[in-house]
Length: 316
Image (cartoon, rainbow, N blue to C red):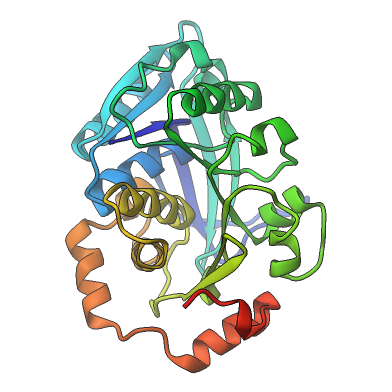
């Protein structure tokens, strides 16, 4: 069983031809609200795409946004440990999605900022604690410490990007980052492998968008190329990857298989609009994997070269 401790936001999404630059106004052509937030998205992915028994520690404000978010999590089969924060709005995010499926996101944390380690439920029966950085860093660190003491594996998606204290990194079993987040944590601008080697967590997974992903474990590297899809909206693709990855590990699957399932789920999430609404079912993930051949050697070669990885360091 997986426990997710993290954020829940109501997403206000505008589609536009391109993401505006500083001082620029862009006319959009569509607006919708979607349940989102990195923590909630990942909890939905654990349950829906990963098929894992999942619970979530989440903070809501005293507004109607909370009702929408709670209903979405419950519909996905996520068990809830709710912290109600009076006189505080529920978290929100403002997202612009461009015609090429990229996005720009601004988050107003609201009640998410009130989450503390004292809210953590008893950890008996959980295999993994999955967290992100849309809640206070002190809370994330304290929760990781409690999980480590209870023998629960700590998985951290270090997003949004920021430098991490050594104390927190020492408590993390699996760190999941994108390329920008990896560079921020490693404080290095070299190749993917050079950055990975500067991060002390036992397992580090870096997502590389349309290229795929790369994981470092026990001094060896595991590569997974991306699944070919026609992207519509990349919102929550990274969250879908994280949740599906942890669910696969909770099921006892090896890291290479877990990366493949996570990559398939993330690819599918890019083909639908919104955050939680875009997260695929476990059956859809199975179908895509079944329809797709294993990574072609030329794609893996390109991924290896991009990462700066010698073939001798690949984990067979």
